[in-house]
Length: 339
Ligand code: TXA
Ligand code: MG
Image (tube, rainbow, N blue to C red; front, top):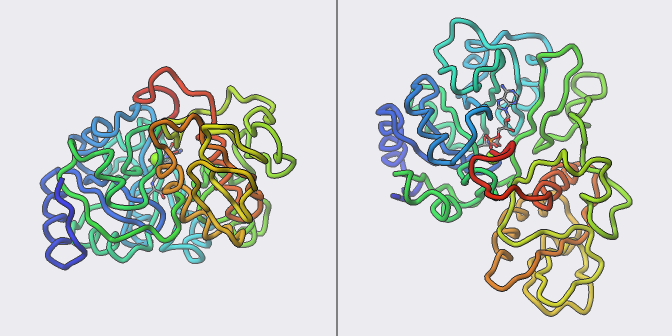
């Protein structure tokens, strides 16, 4: 894998590779994406192969501007207002696909809907414009594993299968976009992310529903969060380091590593990574995936995670932590609802 620094030349090289049907990993404000020309079915198929991603899990199409969005989906008033408020930025809108459409069917895994977003990262925007095509891009990690927030993370997962990563430094937000379903009369958050439910509700003038089991925000200071859910089996294992993840830690066991939030618990002597010593959720979001990777060390029996409050970005942080701690399938690749 070639890691290209942020220069106009690199953007041109990467754009030419995309137009030729190859894969390019690139930074967005959320996490690094693994991009392909969304109109090229063979290139899109190569994304699924490189990640080991199940074919039933659809991809987000990344566009240069709102006009691009209108071209590929049935546009509507709620989308217009949300795009005006949050694009470019970490909000993905799921809308009915236009038919016929230049976007390969495989992108939306055969669904009648399409997920679209306009990323805010300048390098992502430059790349989409230079390529001149919409980019299908999931997070640039192996399916089911922790999302990458640096070019080195991407190389760690995909060096053998992807030619180019554009290196734009660490991602500013560090958690994926919020995925909002607008195909129903009531909007539903399918995945909490960089834009909070409260912020979306304020623009739409109505509360926004969540899909099935949202992360429980409170009362999780002891034991495992997964155990606190009505149906832990509903949780697909995802964002998972190799070591088991134990949530709601108020003390650590011998052999455990510790992911802290706020003042670290006392008496811990093993490896430690601080999400935010001051208890700032925005800082914690930017450091979450790097922390899970940093503590995933040989000999670590489990990663113990201190409680993180559920408000604002804490909802998305707890969603990722719950999935990281969820029961694992026998093998990550190609199983479960992983992306
Ligand atoms: O921040 C992000 O969204 C990053 C960056 C690279 O843009 N991308 C990302 O993609 O997280 P991925 O593939 O890891 O996650 C996409 C999520 C999945 O949960 C997928 O099931 C959902 O979006 N999705 C995509 N298309 C959909 C559709 N048509 N209907 C419902 N859900 C969809
Ligand atoms: Mg992903």
